Length: 108
Image (tube, rainbow, N blue to C red; front, side, top):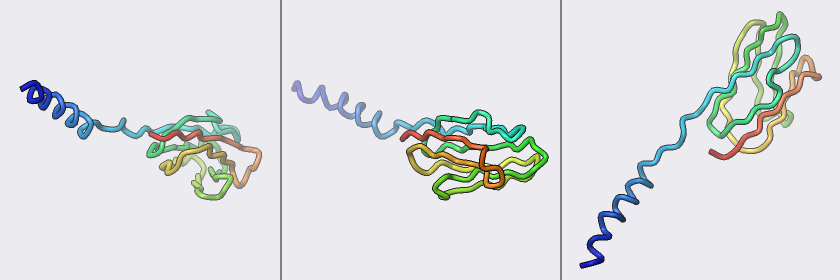
């Protein structure tokens, strides 16, 4: 008889596990102004979107150091990239290599 009282509790616990939802993905904004990524370092999770806004009058890129991704940014344009893997992703502008940034990506 005692075991039967535990069944609803066990069912509720299982239901909570299967219906738990992950936190929604975020959009993380980075501005480019006067040849600088701002902020230079951001924290993100897999599935988040990094969005760069180029406020300069010249084109830029956000190019991963390992060349695994690149976002081309015309003057006064916005571009984005969805984070696909965990780790530290350093990036730079192909046209202005002194422009550097870092995305620190955690597992969700």
